[in-house]
Length: 570
Image (cartoon, rainbow, N blue to C red):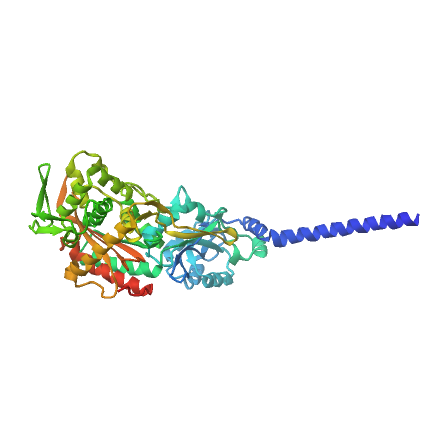
């Protein structure tokens, strides 16, 4: 009997111990493991709705030392709301609140506060924590203060056409343009909704922690360096103003990897106040969403293709009369000047259209078209930005030689700036067409990083060809660009200008007074660390890009060489 009693007692003790252990484990699970979840449930038991709040992954610029700078984040503030039926003295409430909230409109406040049948009125948004605490200490019936969040862009307009913004779509806040749209699935967080508050929640939930409990799906870190981006935007702003241009734009890229270091177009906008923008075209990114006939910056591609095929060299010569007849059409050099016997180096030095036509003819129409396709000028680059379009090279479907002739010097076919800089980068990296990218890495839950790696789409030119055309472009800068007056003594720079007539806005023929100016270059030329493309839409007072863009390009180049501490190469 005694043994049975002891056994039963041990069983009871064991059960009590097990129950106690279960309770402790459950409390640990509720308070520690699932603590945030239950706090969120408490935050859902509020009684007064406020403005929509949301949480969203962050976007970061990245400096050369890999330090991160916030490009887009979620900012927290407070909403001031009133419950009209609880207000006893409207004038007194206004007087006390206006001492805390700057710019609180008296007339609007009185109208709202006297709506006794209205259960809820929001009076002010984006209050600071200090203001919210002051209001709460007033302890007046009819006042409520709630947490709210919103998308914030700390750098203002910097890289705005790349970043895009978060805006409403079907009553939901989503990425509308740029990276915000392209990476919506990464940046978006579930659990967006409304914050409300009641007495129970105030006990259980710290109001300062009423948001942000859901973990981010992901943050994105850009290849864009804010220092380089800022420098590019300042230069673009200056040249746009100087020549009263419709638009200026530029891209800076590492030609070895495809990393976009800066990308901009002016004018731009401040995504913090996108609702005030009247011109919707400012939301688009012309580097990927617009195409242009780019002019003579395509000549290095034409010549490199002919050199690669072995049909010309830099010393190949011809007699230049200032014009050439193709199928009854007269194709002229920019100045129609007869230069006599010249070679292919002179073609680059003096930007001779007739020399580019000769290179195309020696190459043959089919081979010329193949190289244009291989350079990617008729396809999308695959860059991680929305709404990318492909170039229009449909003129090369024609059997007419005139279409190929004009294409050889950059007229008659249209390409996007991003496709153009990728094609030109093949001259700087040994002949490879690579894929560009703006996001360096994605950081998902748990700190897992996914980096973007170099992707070579295809080889276009032999390495020897790329080196030869680079040598020719360096010589053109040293001897011919503004008479050789802006060359860099200790750095080799390969570059080329371009000027192209623009189509009339009615789409019928070319304008006689509207031009696109372009300029590209890379340095140090034989081990390029960056390639830059600048474009200027319809500048006034200067017909040729050789007047508008060489000096801004060299200013940008000097900055980059200094900023990245690149040693001299000559």
